[in-house]
Figure 1 (cartoon, one colour):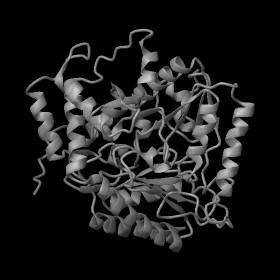
Figure 2: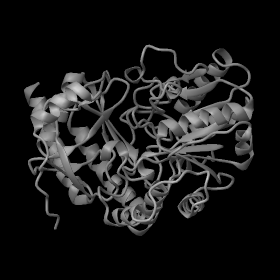
Figure 3: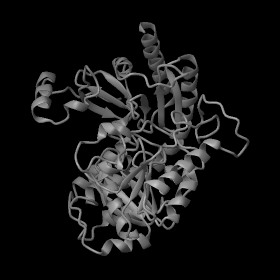
Figure 4: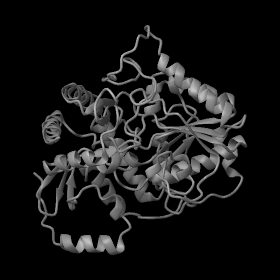
Length: 460
């Protein structure tokens, strides 16, 4: 039984005043009535008043095995007593033990690892390595994608709300996202998910007309927007900030062929899909039956501790010795001890299997609510990366307005559940919880969400 420690810090009013005056974060406070988080354990969070919340967003898909997980906490404490920091110019056991362990989870030839502190750092490094290796400059990503908030990765990112009006990395080309719900093409069997779209199609077995059209759009991008040779193609196996968007099953396989024909390398951004979250596989790219040339990762890699990584092939890694590249904190002993413990805990707690079973149960139950309510347009995802796209009505598929999304989000929070939102128009609720949640937690959320949607439609 967790005993909640009393909050002895400053008042809510003091925190809000400091947030206004000294913290550059006011714009992205989620709620009209903010949540003042004080403590966490596994899938639960408590606020400063002792109210408990079921956390179904996990710090944006970051807390992978559970808040303050005892095994990870113990490993962190052991390392804190031994060595906090030394840089990777020295040989220390934690760095090498972790790299060896992480490499064992990746297929050949993805075996060379460079550790960073964040996903933005990892993706920016991947951009540099791709350009060095290929000798080319242009990089293609999907519209709606999010690959980081640094000045370079902001060029990759294709979501207006995440872009500032400044010069960002040039040479980034955004192609049509093969979104089978909101995009111009989609059908009943397109995606690798327990729940398909409400859109009908007449595709024969093994044929996907939507995929054919989306690949034609990528070919059009190569023909019109890109030079004859490119550096790379970045793709999340499932879009995260874009709203858990899934592509037709064979899209990435065909896209990778096109990219490699133009001299580019293929990069899988696993920041949100990695470490068993999709359930069926440890990495999201494995669900597409592809092997990228480079994989970037962060978030769940450290269960909330700042860690990121780029994994690539020996051939590409050789290109990175043309100059010195140094990261003060990347691969420090504490980060490596935490990340190593996370890998052990994922295996010992069977979190990948839990993601598959509990996530599938949640999606199939959510599909019943989709069929019940006109405002739930789509339910999608794999494992515990799930999106519910909200619409004015199913016929038009127009996004539910921001004020309505906020109203529902606030109701869900007030009843004791924290969820996220995303999508190009902010129209998709996101479920990406710690991978330790149970079916009982799902039933609680379903009751809360049903009540919130029912209340909204009644008021409407």
